[in-house]
Image (cartoon, rainbow, N blue to C red; front, side, top):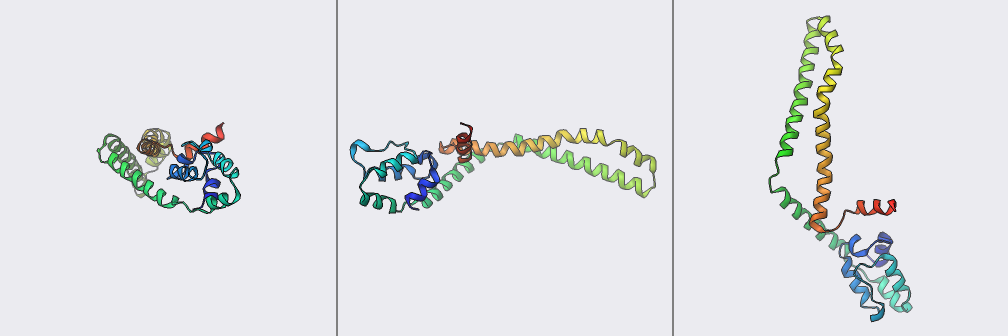
Length: 185
């Protein structure tokens, strides 16, 4: 991937955070810059563009045409993240999954019970039981609401937990968080 594509992706973000292998890219650009104009390690895309625009045209063309191994760095970064996540999963955290399984079984048992009652009332032509079931729906909804909300919360929290694990494993905040923080300012 050439530097123009990288700078287009990063924009005003910090290259070393937004692009895997970004620190190596900044170091490579610093090789072309004079000592008094070297970029810091946390250089942004706009700082890089400004530094490049101050160079002679032949050096600008050489820097901009150089291919960087960003794709390889992305793959290596992904492999590292997955390794850290699998180590964290190997610790055997089992309380939350057990609670989620119990809530799922509770919902299944309630649904099966109601279905059996409805089928039996229809087959036995028991209108009284059918009308009782019909009036029973608020109680059924209340009793199923808690397990369903717990299950929904559990699966939503797992997603956030994995984002936090990636952040802890790599020391880099997720890209989505960085992008949303840019729009909040």
